[in-house]
Amino acid sequence: MAKETRKQTPVLAVVNMKGGVGKTTISAHLFREFYRKKAKNVLLIDFDPQFNLTQALFDQSDYEVLKSQGSTILSVMESAPELSIFNTCDSDGKPADVSVIRQRLKKAAKSNGEGVKPTYVYLDIIPGDFDLSKYSLIDDKNILGLAGRRFKAFIDKAKEEYDLICIDCNPSTSFLNMCALRSATHLLVPVKPDRYSMLGLRLLDNFVNGLVEITVKPKKIIILNGIPRSKYDPTVENELRSDPVYGPMTMVTKLNTSDLLVANPNYTGFATDKNVAYTKALRDKFHLLSDELTVALGLK
Image (cartoon, rainbow, N blue to C red; front, side, top):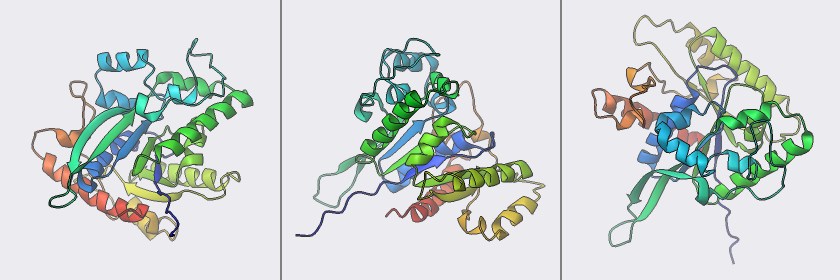
C-alpha cells in the first residue's frame, strides 16, 4: 500500500525589521486576491499587537463583540480568564481551536468538473489583540515557553485545514516574532525602494541566520512595494535585483503606490473589493503576484 503523503501547508510570516513598508497592506489585499484567483483555503493571523489588519477589516463595534467573546489571537497564547494586561494565565492547556475563534471573511464554491459536486474554499482570519503587547513586558521563561508551545500547536493544527497560513508580524525581534519564525516555512519581506527598508531587510537576514535554534531557516521572498508612478529613482531596486543573495529572492512584479491601498477610516474591507476606478488594475497586479507566490511556495 502506498504511503499516505502528509499535506504540506506553507506558513508565511510577513515581516521586515522596519515599519511602514506595507506588511499589513500586503497581508490583507494580496492574500484576498490569492484566495480569489487560486481557490485556496487561506488563514490570516493578525499577530501584531497594533492589530491594524483586524482594524482594516472589522468595524470597531464588531471587533468589541469578538474581543468580549475571546475570539482573538490572545486565546491562542493563553487560557481565560485574562486578569489584566500585566497578567497572563500560565496554564499549559490547549490553545483555542481554530474553528472556534476564526472569523470567516469569504466563502466561494470551487468547481470540481462537470457532474461533480463543488467544494468550498474559505478566507478566514484570527483577529488581533492589543493585549498581545504584554508579551514584550514578560521575562518569565516558563510563561513565554508555555505561550510559545501553544502558538506552535495551534499552527500545526491549522495546517491540517488550510492550504496557506499568513502571519502578519510586527517590526521587531520580539517574542511574538520568534513564535512566528519557529513556525514559518517562508518569510515574505516587503521592501520599499529606500535605504532604510534595505537596512531592515539586512537586519532581518542577520537575525534569522543567527537563530541557532531554527535549524531549517524559512525561505525568504522579497516584494517591492510603494513604487512611485512618476519621478522614480530605481537605484535601490537595481541594487536589490543585482544582489547575488537578494536578487533571486525578489519577485518580478512590484506594487506601485495607490490611493486604494491607503487606510480609510470610513471604509472597512479589502481594497480590491471596492467598486471604484482602477480597482481592476490593482486586482490584476495582485493576481500576477499570486502567480509568482504560488511558484515560490511550491503550491499547485
